[in-house]
Image 1 (cartoon, one colour):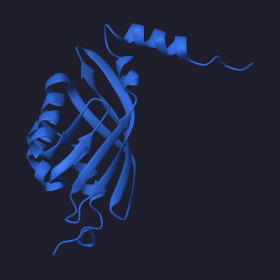
Image 2 (tube, one colour; image 1 turned 30 degrees about the vertical axis):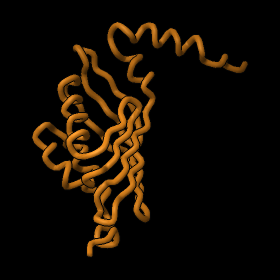
Image 3 (cartoon, helix red, strand yellow; image 1 turned 30 degrees about the horizontal axis):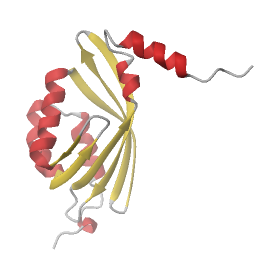
Image 4 (cartoon, one colour; image 1 turned 90 degrees about the vertical axis):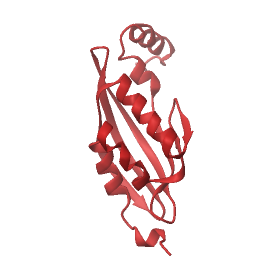
Length: 147
């Protein structure tokens, strides 16, 4: 029987896949994610290969040249953590947003839970049309600097 011990470094291949993610590489979702994997980010909460694939297909439809730049990674037991910068272009405006992923691996070495953490307002502030109002709100709610 396969166990997580048989897959001690599942994080590195997964992150390499993310760093080179393309519409053509989406067929590898089943290689990296358990059939009932749960994926959560600030906008989504989906389960299973079909819904995870649909999430990434939507990303490729709405973002030009999306790319994950992996910054750091840490793995231990059946969990992994990575920091990254996600960049791309939306309607001609480039953006770059830092974030992190907390991953839990099933006994077969595939991801069972994937939670992404990033500041949606950091993304919105870089987008056309809504960027100005978001930046205004950020300034309005920021604590005053001490003197």
